[in-house]
Length: 203
Ligand code: GRF
Image (cartoon, rainbow, N blue to C red; front, top):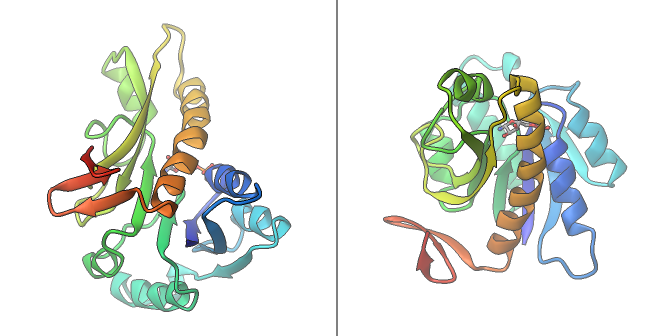
């Protein structure tokens, strides 16, 4: 299973995905990493792992449609089975999402459907939540709204700050994203008309 990973930043999730595949017979192979920012540290991580990289600066395009069309071209040159969003900080057009329907995964730092969008750790703290976490989901046209694949839950501590929470959530992200990618690569995970399925069981 060939995978293209899209990033915008540090790429710690990308690193976890890379590390998870560098065993002997992992069914997924990350064939390319695409960033919309030339200075994303994740690009360096990809280069170190010998993975091809591409940079597509969204500011060079007139609108989202033009950027997403160019992005599709770059991605499809690698003919991936799966496209993984790992801290890719651009909202994707419905056309892009439809193009990769059923083979586009995202990770979000909250227990979806809670806290779609940004500043999730701060919002969880402000709400007084006792639990927080992260979610892997199939991407659909609704932002952070597609069917859930796997979540990790952590307890919120009384002295937590957005930073300390983010740090502990990240540890969990690095655990569940490789898991979801492996399920997909093993052909165990699929998007259905009503949700997501693992080993034929609705999630
Ligand atoms: C993660 O918190 C992820 O949930 C969100 O963006 C962040 C990316 O972090 N979508 P990194 O670049 O993988 O370190």
